[in-house]
Amino acid sequence: MGARHLIGTTAVAVGLLTMIGSALAQDGKYPDFNGQWRRAVRVESERIGAAFDPSKPFGRAEQPPLTAEYQAIYDANLVDMEKGGQGIDPTYRCLSPGMPRVMIPYIGMEFVVTPATTYILFERDWDFNRHIYTDGRGFPDSMALEPKYLGYSIGKWLDTTGNGRYDTLEVETRGMKGPRVYDASGIPLHADNQTVVEERIHLDKTDASLMHNDMTIIDHALTRPWLVNQTYKRQASSKPQWFPHMVCGEGNSHIGIGEESYMLSAEGFLMPTKKDQPPPDLRYFKKYER
Amino acid sequence: MPRIPQFRSLLFGAALAACAALWPPLACAQQASPNLSVDGETGWRPVGDDFLPPPSGPGPVTFDKRYPYVDNPTARRTHAQPTYRVADLSNPILQPWAVEQMRKANQEVLAGKVPFRARESCYPGGVPGFLIYNLAFATRFLQTKNEVTIINPGGPELRHVYLNVPHSASVQPSWYGESVGRYEGGDTLVVDTVGITTKAFVDNYRTPHTEALHVVERFKLTGGEKTLDVLITVDDAGAFTTPWSAIQRFRRQSSPWEEAACAENNINPFTFGVVPIPQADTPDF
Image 1: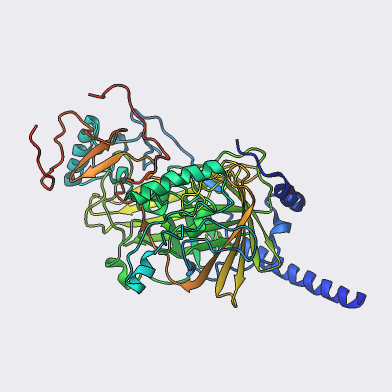
Image 2: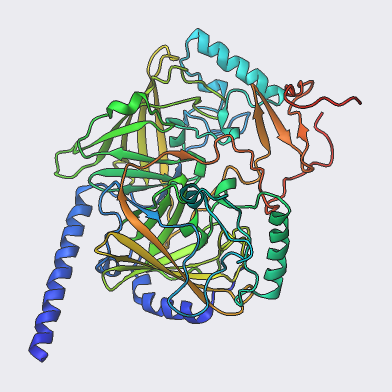
């Protein structure tokens, strides 16, 4: 009985060691993206907001290389925002920011790295979650018919130093749908949704708590590719942190009707959001004499 | 600040004490574990959006037998009229105040009002409501050394379960609370959750709870790993006369993840008054 027990225990121990060994080997092959990541850089600006280009103040000062047509769209959007409107930023209606805007990120994000897929999980429900496929697949044939706010992301792990370990995740994203803007100031992407987002995601060479995402945006609303270096800081903690689950629909009193944005008052009445805003078209409601 | 129910949490904490000192808990995390992820496209579709009764003992709130609940799939199959849920207030698990709150909600439904349901207002399901959130989407699991993330793409709704760590000393209430977990017996994931906001309901019958709600879920692969059974134990002396249990069952399916925008242009008409809209004293213009 004792011998059988010993054999059983040994077998379990060997099994466990094998599991631990394979788990460690797996862990060792990929960079440590564990933990929770938030924006690393905030530049002071006149308006409050997270700039898509974190090296510059939020808004016009980002100087996105827009074509004349899309610069005019951006300018008109800023004028509307100054009056109290929402401009062309669609997220007030709980639309997803989509790619590349989710990679700002607004609250926090976590990476789950597996050999076949790297998942990027966000804490706001309207950001969704990114799936970066690293299993060798290509973009699907159905991509044009089924575009997504976050698009389709195909990734490849690189060993840039030749030390036998991956250090950089190279990602290409296509197949997005709109409307999308780069950040809350309303910098527009082209309406044709032919955007291509290239990313190189890697840890800083000297600071493992700093992550770089070297982004290149190719879009027909741009005069040239827009290069932006997003940086994320790993949240230091000796114990796990539970992010709050942020819900766009929770108490969201914004209502988009046609091209206009309205508000719902606490009493349940429709309110304007800017001076002299016309009421919505009520043609389908019976008209009452006052 | 919610009180963490003492006995179960103490047992759970004791079991994890050694591991807690090792965060990231490498030694503990290498326990044999059920593979709930299987591959990147494995999901678990719920068999229904009502809790099933436990094998024995007090069980969950179901519908009032005078007003049978007919869900949409059943209605389509049987050519019956679908109905909204009217809760059975005779269930002895309910504290009197909970009965009264639910009676008002029942009366509103019977008077013709569309009842609140988390998914239909794009609100999170809470715990254990996450397990019966909807029928349309398959639940996904991501398992890593220190964490299991449970995802319902129809929101999307995310729950973070940290493995082999104790609960925090004080927990801020949130939609999904604070979940800690461990593996048991090679086929079961045990998740212990506290700190669930009272904005969430326990089920789709609008059963309320207090901040003392404590939920233990045991996710177990069954049926040759084709099904996933969850035994749920609910303890909240503020809302319930006794701890009670329920079961939820999922079937394995293989399908790509969906990108589902629940809140897309949703103006949230069925808030049930759980989150009042802020009101200004003076007009802006």
